Image (cartoon, rainbow, N blue to C red; front, side):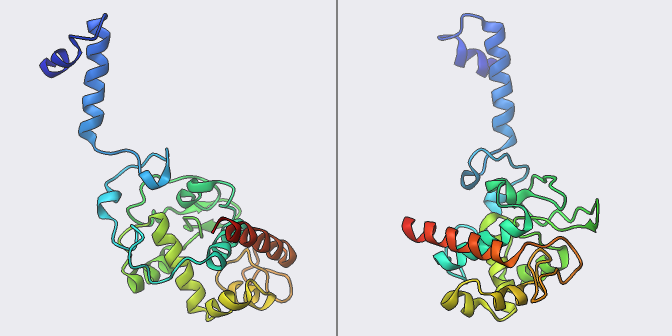
Length: 217
């Protein structure tokens, strides 16, 4: 309280109100950082900025983010329903709910039309995330880590090179349908009996997004 009085004495007209505001400010300061600079105004709960690895900071990424790969990542998010949410998509649970800490996969089971613990921009299941995180040495569930893990899954399916050279073809979609239920197989259906996007819609989104990314480069 003494520190607050010393700080506000030269400026405050209403010392009681100013003191209360100062105390609140000191409490928030002691609680640690609430905002992740890479997420704008998205509030966090937990110390994940301090836990981020070199990959999270954008250093020494295993998978370079080219326009073609970013367009693919954005298309996966579009198919999975997290694209329109912007940065908040990285904090999205199955069904559209939100979680706060990006320190790790939330592993929250949600029961709606289906029951799933999928989370993040690419709707990782806990087991899938654990595999990718172990392979890539990812220490958090932060946005860059999620991007890297999604590219790992594409690479694991053997089609990352095809995306690099030919873009999002119908063949690539068919392979990725085994990874993401929202992608259509050759029959235009989900490999897991869930709602699916049409191939033409995904191809159009990819091409439009890729063009915008190339123009920005």
